[in-house]
Length: 207
Image (cartoon, rainbow, N blue to C red):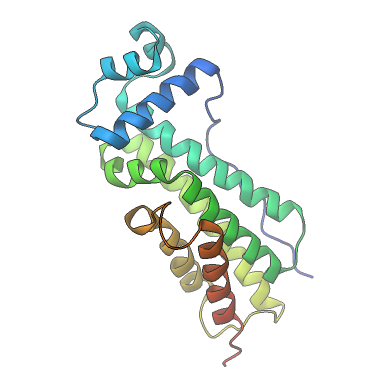
């Protein structure tokens, strides 16, 4: 059996202290409700019930908060991906586990995804490079699972693994624009349907 892709890691640690989490939670609520431009540092400080000095002790700016909101999401997803890989599942089961977990995680944290999708252009070049590095790490690792399945004959090879990855992860990246927690289907149902769709397509052994 071919080697599985390496376990990915994010480029930076997630914020963990109680004060940091309170500030980030407050920023997320306000960004989601009022937008990045409509939220002031003073508003975040008041909502988090901390001093402005405490905020600036942990975060350099509102841009820093926006980056950390996204980073907490992608770091969680990279950790989930790594946990699936560590189980040593066969490619088909691994792809299903990764996709269902990713969709459920995105649904559970849809506000973070929405804020980032709407305001990501506010990030400076350095933070955008870090974002792209994390996203590419996830993309490359998932593609490796598809490639492994194709090498082993589990998946058909008519469609390149890169195309499969773009379709599967692209759908998830668009969830902020269409997913609603109160919609007609639960996140679990959507996850099962999307994973089934991707796996059905991979099962077509056309040459």
